[in-house]
Image 1 (cartoon, one colour):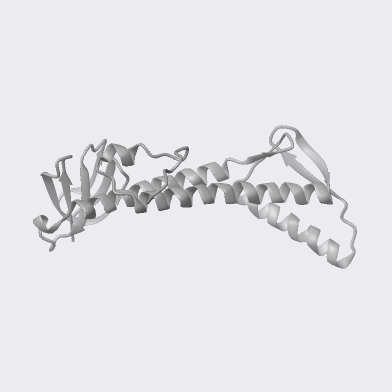
Image 2 (cartoon, rainbow, N blue to C red):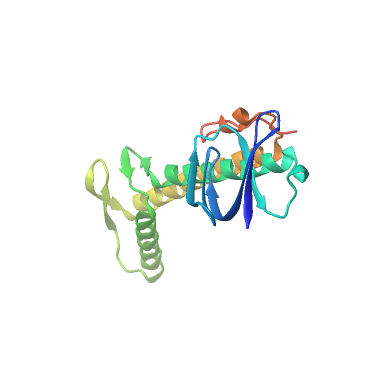
Length: 193
């Protein structure tokens, strides 16, 4: 079983909740299943907190361990935000393209068909594709390959941004929770020395 330990900004223990069977958490909330209380959800938590095995002595928990636990929550939050940006679609030459998982699969299928037609010499000169803002449009093979490349760049750019933020968080010692809370997907990470 696990226990939840909460600390204030001065790293003074504020509370301990025991008999936790399972849990999920964000930077400001935790939902856990307790052997005694059933499902418990705490939201708007202003404290730093950590969940550890019940056998770990409270006094052995370090500030660094707690901050690393909180960093994990922030990184998960940013990963979700990255996915949202990617799945939100992209713009190429004034056309807005959906890019949810089903759309990405369709892009891959169409790309494969184009490559196949280039290898076999089969004719595939016009590709019809539905845009979000201009309805169904026709694209030449070359135009559609450029659209696919734009989709890949959209995906890669957001993943690279996430990786920069993840590295920044993992390599920075945060003294205050507000510093960590203040990071979002639009944050430009400072150089970490």
